[in-house]
Image 1 (cartoon, rainbow, N blue to C red):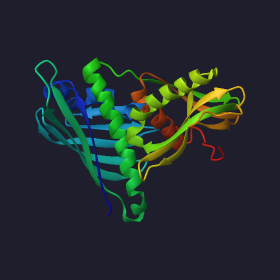
Image 2 (cartoon, helix red, strand yellow):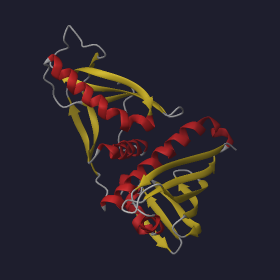
Image 3 (cartoon, rainbow, N blue to C red):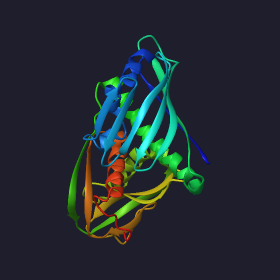
Image 4 (cartoon, one colour):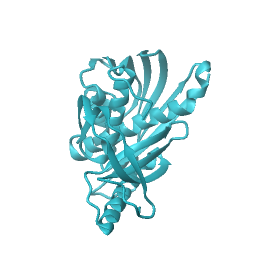
Length: 282
């Protein structure tokens, strides 16, 4: 069977012992779970070294601690019961890294080993990417939980919103998904500068995602500045287009951009659960 190996890491400004308590305690761990934030109403039952979860969106299963090395590593056995059946082993590993007495640094690594049924071999790259994205979201929330005391991310939903047709000038980029957070901020700044130079007034900027290649871990997006009409002379490096009027399922994210992936994941879970149907025409 095709083997899946996924690993993501992050550096947190705290000693291992301070981070470990947020991981070893199952109740605290739910506060930075990349799945619970998408469905806070999911049922959770803790029983010693195990817990079970059951949700309409995130499915059901059981996690059991298999090995604990205080302040260094926790290994787990994972059983997924729905929406499909699967088993896996995963771990959280903490390693002190270069820092100073006032600001110690710890690298936290979240790794998983699992297998796919042989007939799903073609999904290996996509599954590794999607699991890695979930792990990265979780580690970012763990970092904020430890360093800030809370996770600054609130999600809410508007099930049927109509948006009007919109002309725009845009900046297109193809990049690795892991680089999007780092690249988007300077791209937004570049758009603001270009519009200031040509004296164009704009409504709030929005982003369209044209392609998701989960197998390669790449995405193509366009940062769009709305305009009343497309000008005859388009600044170098920009493109133009029109977003058609359409109905939308809106996921609102309130918080810093680094947690925007939570909104995307929550929307995709609701699509897979048939809460809304995606249009393939746009």
